[in-house]
Image (tube, rainbow, N blue to C red; front, side):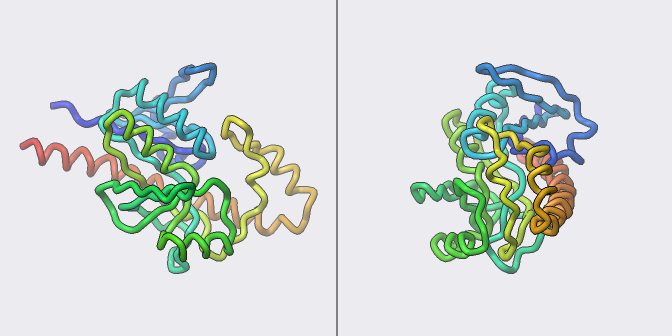
Length: 235
């Protein structure tokens, strides 16, 4: 009895590094771009880069390559709800596109995530929470959901809080390349020359590590539970 294939779309490899450390990997090329595809049993994972356009491309690639039954958007998210803390897992029932207000019902989980085009600081987070009633914000989930919808596939999202509602992040957005990759060395050099950024950069690194481990634990359980639920439904 075949298990459903799950295609997982993340932005950056560091978000899912503890999970994929033991997975098989191979390089694939699509439309002039190279992607590293990670595979483990009936799950496959691709890291497409930061932002909606990068997520859209990566979703198309992994769907064509893996022929999944379900597509899952995973990764870091900013908390809009002040009660959420770094490392908390959120599986949103509703995903909202901030550009047009469109709402996607994932059919699983609870609460609301909003996909916004830019990195949100505390004031922008407050505005998004008040306007949409969302608990968390990311940049990629809507793009992944639309890629799944075009192919008639089910969609879900599993996010981890990497910065709380009060956190002001260092200026990382200026170091995202056109392909969605993060220019880590350029950012590190930029921050090293600006002592006023040191504390925020250290906090970002610490919170990212905590969030990554929490997300990977949740993902491992998610994949296992999805397979178990499918087996039970087929009996």
